[in-house]
Length: 253
Ligand SMILES: O=P(O)(O)OC[C@H]1O[C@H](O[C@H]2O[C@H](CO)[C@@H](O)[C@H](O)[C@H]2O)[C@H](O)[C@@H](O)[C@@H]1O
Image 1 (cartoon, rainbow, N blue to C red):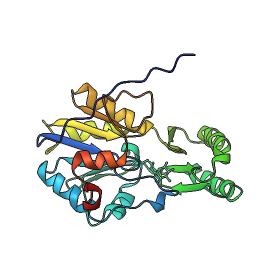
Image 2: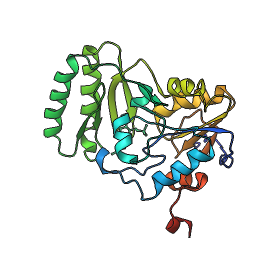
Image 3: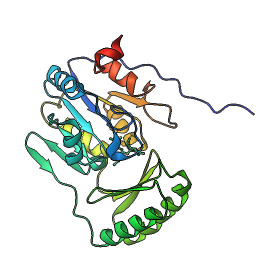
């Protein structure tokens, strides 16, 4: 039996002042934790991101599946340009594009999902307003049932789609993705006219890679997930922080 082909990708080039830099959060800037609320932002990371943003004349945005409010809580007091909910929310320069309102049916589905999680210790239902994430990182035995539950719930949510990720499936509006958010930033100062660079680890990040590739930019897959259209690659969170000069002093030694 022959081994599956692997894509050979190089380490991305070092940061340059003319970049428009877009960064995914979980699994790229931050290590995974057992639960969404358990992630740790190393002390000093917000200040280092801020310094990098200043070097790029402000052309640095977080592009995440988390909500904008959640990103602000995590990275406080930093308040970077950002896209949340996989591109459904976006904020830049005092302008905020809100995610669509949650349809009425979502409340029932959230309630049913919570009852389901009570029967599967470790399963986590994350309420993100217009989206719901069903996590099984701490309940791997519930993965199939949670996926089936989400697929069936989709029938009651016109205009929604499933978004798979690391040990999670989400029900979310299909109206925008991370690629749309990156394209919108690239139409605006200070991102406009710069070389787009996007690093991310997850399936949702493929939309962003496509937009960056189409503009001759630098798409960076974090980790070993395949297939991916990304053209560069880094091993994981530590490598991302080292690449961008965001690591804390101890990690540099
Ligand atoms: O686009 P991202 O910034 O990478 O966000 C994707 C999802 O990340 C979070 O879930 C993931 O990280 C959790 C914390 O480490 C982990 O417990 C979970 O298993 C991962 O799937 C977040 O909770 C989701 O809302 C984001 O969509």
